[in-house]
Image (cartoon, rainbow, N blue to C red; front, side, top):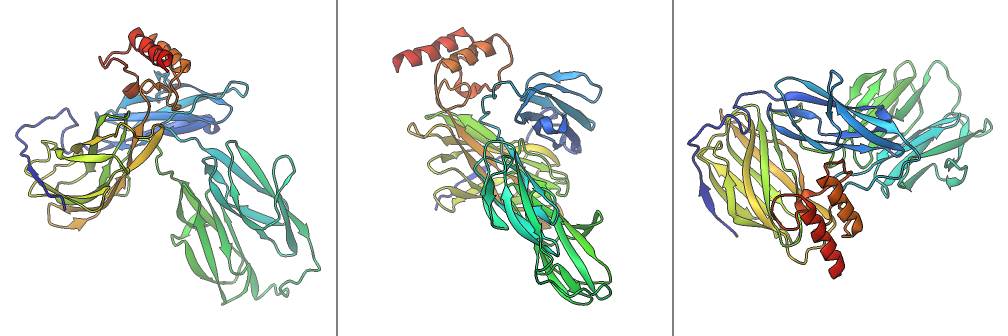
Length: 475
């Protein structure tokens, strides 16, 4: 067991980093124009003067043009940039241009690309399971038959049969796709006796993001069936709705038939594990979050932990889990001076997980860089990887002694080769050209500063481009 204790006392008030305690977070809304042109990341609630990482991911066939504010003024022409949050609610719009003949943009190592899987149904049934997914994701698809119809098959856009099973697992590709379920009218098949007075229909359907099912599609009044929803990867369940009114938030429930047909719609929210910069959840008062930290083999990286609190907090504890083979230097733990009076201890739960306890101090409301520690990337660590740093088992104590949990947002540690300016895990002439483009202050699709400063002088210039070229000549 590892055990250490560090005590810090806040002596100085620092109103500019971050904003003064007590300043409430304000909303930052991000939009895409057109809506299908791409995805935007970084929206949320932030304390004024917070620097927020804003990013876009263009959809297939689109290219990014610019960011504008609510008045139409251009804010930035870079797809990824840092935005300083103001003191009011703000809206930024990402503009995309349809350019299907343009060459594909290089993949951004800090963004995850998603493709849309659209499901369609011919007359005689309904389908569920569509949505936005990374390529190679295994998705559950389901087709439900209406009375008097039988399922035939699933086909793709070319008309080829994908599956003859009504419910099956489908692996997505790196392209937007449409799958269609086909049904055949079969009035001679056995069916429930027609009873228009006592028997009614239970219909279940879904929007993007999951599958739905019911144990019976037609019930006698007063009898019951089970209705179930299952969220696909990257989505979370919001609830069952009837005519746009929330019926229940349970994934599975028992329904007793009343005196008329009923249609339940399952709704899901696209919520991938790393949608962008951390944001303050609207339904929680306290949030712990980490960011993406980038380096190269042999680096010592600073890994910060942030907290947003709307009320004063006292004692707190949490677990931090690091990627395998990237070890934290527990002797380097640094506590922000705003977190005055805390005694910090930590114990090893496993080879990669550590329990931290902060007692005896007080944290005022606001957004705070709570603590920071250093991690060591081994010289032989595999490059091109981006692995998560996790926060869990959070417990906080309010000023009145109430124990509560808090929401969390995990971070990542990304490791790339020295000179790999575009993050494709290769060092080649493309990286030299990317460096030159950046030095000339022209827009680059991707530029990873942390591994591009070849002579470590904190300045990007032609010397760094020559340094990359030297690496190529030595190989």
